[in-house]
Amino acid sequence: MWKVLSAAILLTVAVRLAAGASTSDELQRATQQLMDAAAPGERAVWEHWTDPTLTYVSEDNEVKDRGHLLAELTPLPPGYSGWITVAEFRCRDFGAFAVTTYVLDEHESVEGQALRTRYRGSDTWRRTGTGWRVVAMQVYAIPQDPPADSAAHAALADYQGVYSLSEHTRQVVRVAGDHLLAERAGRAPQPLLRESGDVFFTPGRPRTRRIFRRGGDGAVLGFADRREGSDLSWEKVSAEVPAP
Image (tube, rainbow, N blue to C red):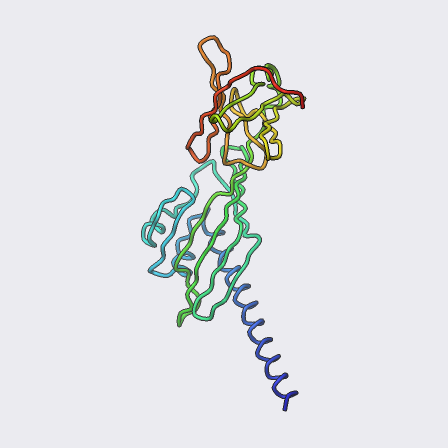
């Protein structure tokens, strides 16, 4: 009796796993077909796989319905070309619906110059009588570090000093070879690389910038710690830095 029950349970689990794998394969193929149809503006592919109730949220935070999205789906203009590869695909099949997430690796050529951008996509699919149809799509750009200005190592000493956020919080910025190092009590030091002019970034944290401010005489007065368009203002209180 127990052997029969165990066999039945194992068979059920195997069937569910196979169904989940099948759904994942099918939706990954469908997602790649959608991406392949984007550059040439092949609306028929999008009309096939998208549900009439589709809600699409773009990387620019625009919310669009299916009609709006299809109307914007046109071939790339002359001088432009590219392709998108779907990678790191994951799928959870819940029977009546499925949820997927993946990375879109976009390669684009603009007037002979190459661009590469990566996005994270997350979709919700509904099982219908005619097959799977996507009802919700959300895309956001994966932030990337900008290129460092390797030729601009001069005058790093201008930024060296002690900076204050408040009477309770201070940090030290010192020169460390060809870059700056920001040190704050209780935290790991952060390297600061010059992006351009007085703008610096920390590798691995592309959503933030340090924008140093200068006075009329050219002296550095402080910096703005910019995060998602909002600034924390730090004031320079000393040009002397403590020993490491």
